[in-house]
Length: 144
Image (tube, rainbow, N blue to C red; front, side, top):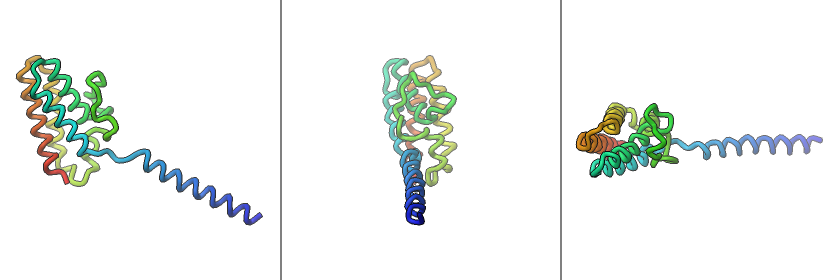
């Protein structure tokens, strides 16, 4: 009887430990650096766009990377090019080493992206995309 209880206790302990390992693998922390790189790429596409719809689409990609799916300006119709990379730059910077130091810069990139996708002027939207690229590059070049 004692052997049976000991075996059952070991099985339960292994199941609990195993569940903890699976949970930690299933929910990795977001990778702010990957999202920043992707957002810079798409803001760059937007900056070089020749039509307003193209600029807004790619700037929307950058905005979705900045905010993540829980962001108030997230728009699935633009596409989520950072899907699987994390929870959004604004969210994942909080947990990144030294990331809190770049929150103001990221928030300004977000505000500029929102203004750019809302613009009805091609050159204004392209310039907003250039600004988003520049701000995110500051973070990329200095985030530890």
